[in-house]
Image (tube, rainbow, N blue to C red):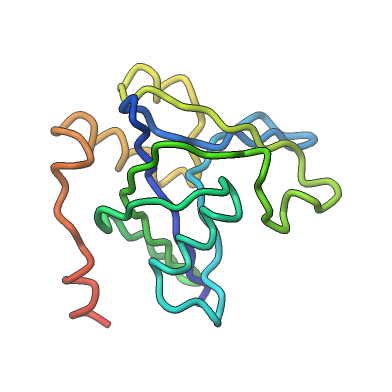
Length: 153
């Protein structure tokens, strides 16, 4: 099973830091920073930290595991994190140099239902979770799933 980690990264201004993807032949869409868990990663949070270093050239403060999505062949772990600076120009992930991958544009998006209704957040199953979190007190009010996830594995 493929495992991925993603960060709901909250900036000092209280916005979400998202990556706008522009790919040939597709409408623009937005994703949470993150990626694949590699076999040599020392756990999920280590994989998230590596991915964020590659994509944003920064260390994040991981606050909690807020959501898990699972399908037949993939499991995605969504972590809440704080971020106070980044350097998209210094990114080093392999995807940035691959031909035909399109553009990666970093955007701070307000954490409002109105702002989220204006973007196509992928994967599509995370968008309802994000909207519900905002409508029900925000991400920092969500329970930390790290402990319950450890008990299940």
